[in-house]
Length: 144
Image (tube, rainbow, N blue to C red; front, top):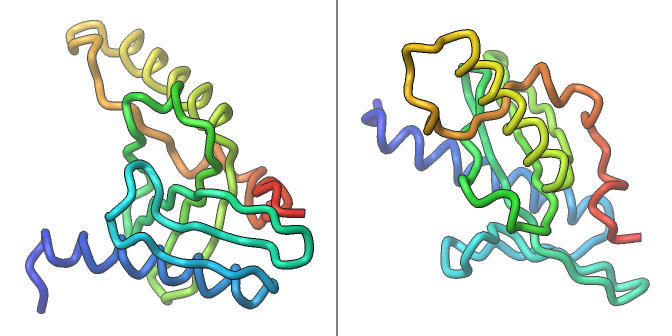
């Protein structure tokens, strides 16, 4: 059995491979950066119109909240949140970075207002229930 840190790394990598595979099945070329390119996990290319995009992938197996980058407001790439269920079924949520920024900002504000004893500098997070409307919204990638 893998150690907790190894499990986290393997889950993250699995999510990236799952998204890249899904994109390939949809007719796009996709390539993992394997952490060699800042703020980008996957490059995707539509050979029909020559559009290329960068994608940030966040993956969870268990739990319901994803950590998102603190500087999300400066990013302009889509996020794909991957949720691996207990039965290993996969759910994908495609969310523009502007929406990730708004949702995570509101979530942090709500948390700190309900918990006045905590520091205001809480990590930015996004709960799976706040992105349900983005499930399988591959059109939001902007590749078409």
